[in-house]
Image 1 (cartoon, one colour):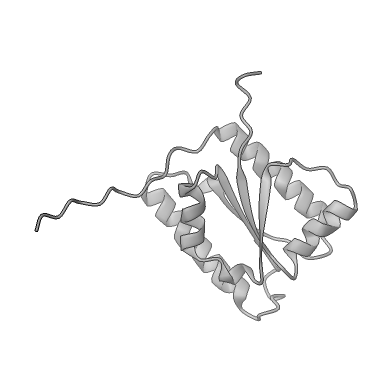
Image 2 (spheres, helix red, strand yellow):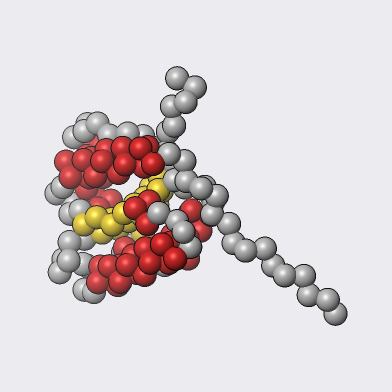
Length: 146
């Protein structure tokens, strides 16, 4: 079993819907892998491309962003911004030669604890099948001579 890989997954969860869905999964004692580490954000629209890229640079094998369903955002248009940003970062990852499937977006409401647990199970299994993420480092700075 020395070859069993357990992925590290960072999850950005919106306070009003997906975090509450995760809480519901917990109080309902639904089983899902313990591979995720949660960052609670007020809105999925506040997660910047910098946060997503930085997560990969720091060693995350996968990143999950979850927010309110389209049209149900507590900040009106936050999830539309999220959709645009995730699409942008997926293209950026693809351009950099990194598998964009390591970034996942899901809409999960506060009443969908089962969906949260299923999403975590499925995403963890997908990342586990991909293996460890390749090193994602910024290009070293050029030495400038004075």
